[in-house]
Length: 308
Image (cartoon, helix red, strand yellow):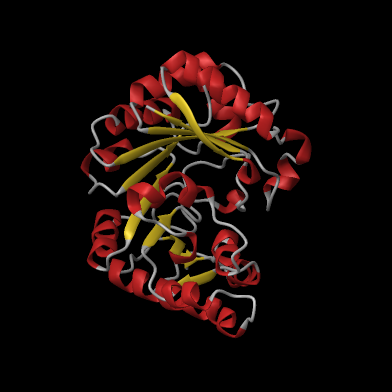
């Protein structure tokens, strides 16, 4: 059993729906999907990348194939990372079963919008067939042994796969089928800070990350480096981050401020949340050091966008 009955109940009470025979996968409807259905705004992924992929917030499926498995316990993570397992254990569900059940579970969670007079009915109809999968909800997706097949299954169903990884599995990245958009989280400018912020459960974590960044440079898909920045922890040393950016050669960099939500509130709290102004200033410093350009921002999520 991957999760205890109590853990499953807590997740479902929090809005998750576990899918697949062995329940190592899950979906949760993103709040921006709900906001978009009510015409109350869209997420920064749509604002930043819609002109590349045509992605829409109301058609996004936020999911994970590796719910209990992650080889980091990031201090800023909104999840209950204390239960993370750093390596795969047990049976593996088929990618098509995971994706099909995830879509059906999301449909059920969105069913109430059909009768909501404030909901955009055209968007609701479109939401029944997601065209974007954010493989990032929980856990580390590259630990799922059939991640390449899941990416291929998304494409078979005309769903654009976005994959977010912590970069701790470079051997997987080197052999993996490329997603349409690859994110690597590089949330520290040096090894000491990486250990403090990301609390890795594996050895050679800094080397693993750097090897993944080197691999990223060879990818032909859209590449994004995500920097989750925490006040009094890793919002420092822009020169160190610049070295990582130059190594990975991403198309975009997302400096993003930590927000005190979920389980992270018991570890950090609101005093560790940088202002959007501070994030934007840090992004300008990175731009000066790397030659990237500050091309966009989204204040509600405290995120800026740098482009090569």
